[in-house]
Structure formats: C-alpha cells, structure tokens
Length: 130
Image 1 (cartoon, one colour):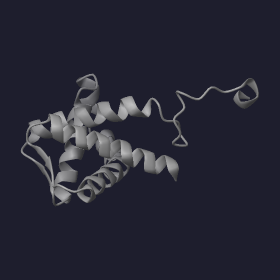
Image 2 (cartoon, rainbow, N blue to C red; image 1 turned 135 degrees about the horizontal axis):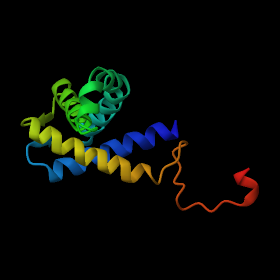
Image 3 (tube, rainbow, N blue to C red; image 1 turned 30 degrees about the horizontal axis):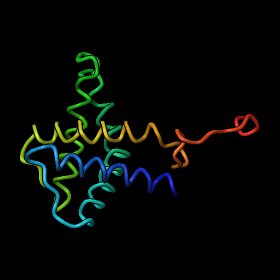
Image 4 (cartoon, rainbow, N blue to C red; image 1 turned 90 degrees about the horizontal axis):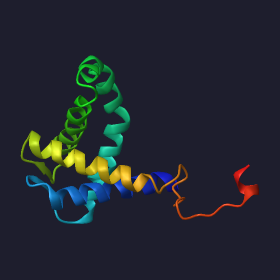
C-alpha cells in the first residue's frame, strides 16, 4: 500500500512540475484536482497504455522507440479529456507535459524501491542482502 501512495505522490509531483514548466498545461487550484489527475494518470498508464503500446508496436519499431513519446502524450491528453479542471491547450503541451512527468517519475523512482521505501540512502548489512 505504501508503494502505491508513493507512486501517486510521484505522479502528482510530476504533474505539478509540468504545470509550472509547460505553457498550455493547467490544473485547477487545490490539491484535489492534482491528486485526482495523478490517480487517473496511474490508472490510464496501467490499463490503456499497454494496449496502445501493443497496437502501435510497428510504428514504435520503425521510429526506434520515439513514438512512445506520442503514446505518453496521448495518455496525458486522455487524462485531461476525462478530468474536469485539468486542461491542455494542444498536442504540444501534452507532449512536453508527458516528457516532464516521465522524467520526474524516472528520477524519483530511482530512489524508491518496490515497497515504496527510499532505498538509495539505506545501508544494508550482509545478512539483510541474503
């Protein structure tokens, strides 16, 4: 359960940073919309994104994986379409926003283990590693 909450916080952090950096991406004031967008983005990424990746696999292979940026932007655009209070001005905002959210998630997830604990700072003994 802790891991899920940490991932939700990471998504929320990425969305918040994206609204600060990306012109044309807005989330209504208040933490409720931000948390709802983060939760919905997690659900969309878990359920819809794998199907989209499989369906676009030939294009992704031909573009050497760059089409995954378009798939990520489409997932962010889907969240904006489904959620009132989350606005994207166009595909460019969705693309830049998805890059910011992905980079934020990648950087913060490198410090988070599967149980949702900060593992980069933990020193383990030899008995704990076995």
